[in-house]
Image (cartoon, rainbow, N blue to C red; front, side):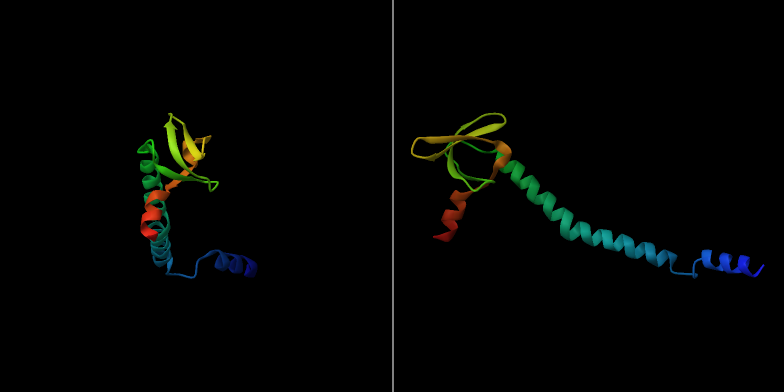
Length: 107
């Protein structure tokens, strides 16, 4: 009988704190969403908008660090002029930013 009472006591929670635990977990997720997930989604939407609004003549940078000027736009790819007559076809998703605005900010 002594072992049975010990097992029952070990299985029962220490009393109280159940509600406060769940409130803390919910607050933790709220803070994570506010400081991590929300800004990342906002940045991702801005990047998608930038890619949709690409036009011929835009100065862009690819994910691989290649600087070039947009020469032609297709549904899923972009032809960029790199240097002289050198042109590269890259996936539209590899375009990460417009560097013409970067050049204006540094002046």
